[in-house]
Length: 195
Length: 195
Image (cartoon, rainbow over all chains, first blue to last red; front, side, top):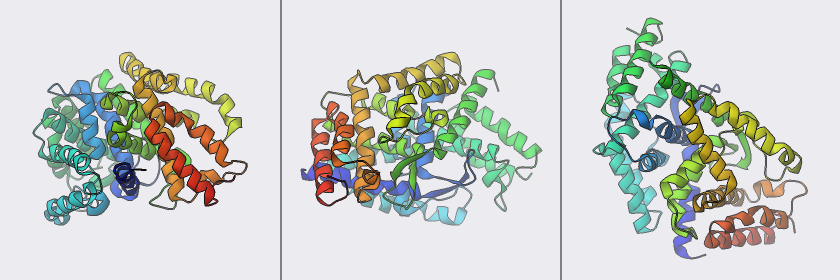
């Protein structure tokens, strides 16, 4: 086996670790927390299913690539829960270092290609990145809805906080943001998120 | 929320169940079996990383779509382990019925689009489907390698059986099949697969 293919396979075995990075969100289908690999797969299917609601035309295949790689760096940087403001302060630095380490396993050109996708997702300057981010925020909202609150019940978090953190959905899709707001409003009425 | 979007979201919540469908393969990064959602994500990243080894030119975005949907029907049909010949007999019938049920949750056009991807994957008549299938067979081989045998140790299974079930990798990529054979041969020498 040549060294290039060996580097590819070494990387593909290392990323198995994404299946062990737990998120705060509860699954809808089982009584446990979701992991990053499952989450990333769910986003890929959401992009395919919901692309028609994107405000701008998007390349669906490219958008799927963005969501497939978007959480990889959490293998080393860990998950930063959306309502954890203390962890958020160090997030960018931790994630940049993790990206250098992880993508460095690959041959240079292949590592640069994945790194470019991660950078694009983070920058949100393309229609694809904006829609990918919208779906990334919508997915746990659906899980929280099914769990009658889920992480909305985090101590100190209010429905207004949820709306503020989820507003980025509107940068990718007005229709999906409208639907998300309906769910948050109804969740607040039912007492699943504090007023 | 209009009924079309409601059907889309209902489907996207139903598919959360894929995260509860366990495969026979052990993870490399943790002491538990893999689930279908994690597996599907891993394949998506493998398609992106290994596309250069495809024997025929492939549309990477389209190939990723194939692997994202390829196991969805197991939500109702269950996983059919590759070395379980009894279950394999009823596999096609169970999976067709599951596809009708699952894709029927979606609006007709959306359900037909996902069904077409699943049919394409199963038929293996396009370069994208052949490469997707190759990666689907290569991924658990890497996990079994890391587990010093994994499902290769299934009672009654020999290294020759493993080679026979994995040969389909060669329909998508001669290079990856050559690498897979090296791993199986070495696994047999080490006693991880029976001679």
